[in-house]
Amino acid sequence: MADPASPLDALAPALEGRWRTATEFVEAVLKAAILDGSLPGGTPLRQEELAERFGVSRMPVREALRQLEAQALVDMVPHRGAVVTEISAADAADTYAIRRALEPAALRLSIPRLTPAQLGAAEALILAMDSETEAGRMGLLNRRFHMALYAAAGHPRLLALTEAQLAAFDRYLRFHLAAHGREHLSQQDHRAMLAAARAQDIPGAVAVLEAHLDRAAEAIARFFAARGG
Image (tube, rainbow, N blue to C red; front, side, top):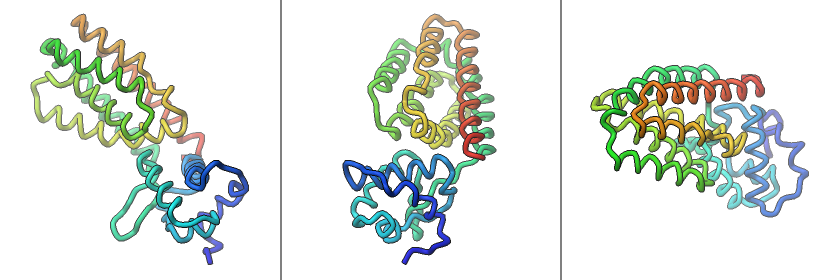
């Protein structure tokens, strides 16, 4: 039997709903509990226990966990299985602070050297994000767009550090998309950055980027405040 003291007890009120499929049911209930903090980071999500609590077989549980992993809500840990992703307001703020320091520098260096092909690649990535619906793919496209604009900076270590921080940020982007939907991803800022880069307007492009990062940092801070950290 499931442990009565388990964090999974927080799921009980949601188990009475009706859903089209068992996978949709498990995914929706777990997703809501992760996003609102009812299931804290590090909580193990054992397939057997979840199947018992949800009254379903292990197959829809396994598929739901796979989908939650794609949204960065669940991590698959060797020898432990699925656990709720551990994120924090402090780590998110730190990641944004590092991006705020690195990315404007990379963009300033890159704009004078960007080729028409590189600018065209950035535009194609914006168009791809317009039609993308999968959160994991959206994070990858967002990272590629930013790196396309920084690609001509000419400093490999700076670009490596920048890309590493964008990769670290990816789980926060996917958390944000899971909580608020893709319409909250600011494509307007992306288009404005690209237009300024094409016009060789370095101050304008950097201003758009800095405002873009500041708004994103504020949005994730509000998200953590709403869920109590």
